[in-house]
Length: 162
Image (tube, rainbow, N blue to C red; front, side):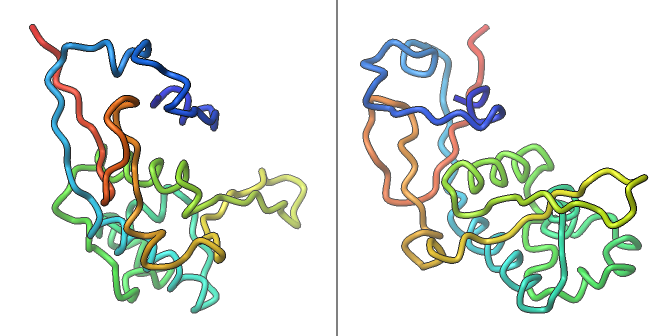
């Protein structure tokens, strides 16, 4: 499913019937509740909009984790209320959370053409306003296809069996 998410492909877990790699795997799986982090991340992105700041996906990860402090200060991201709220999770886990929020259509990215034709377009992150509610932030993630919905935002971390 991570590969599908990477290419923005949607997958209906009901279609699996226990045949996907996730369901067929015998690897140890650890579930991590990231609901609090998801809430902080979404609120941070919403705050950038409220303050007329634009933020890219990469910069949002730095702001969320509180890294690249000089770059964050230059862009005033270090003054965000939720700046650094993800400082105690790994970069990889923060990136997976970001991808999860995009996949659940709580966050989205939008390409903005540059006025200067010599520069590439930039993709900015924003909150999908219609989905911004406490119910949407405390997402339901299907997790493994056959296990049914969970009440909070969970990411599955697979530990390969050796």
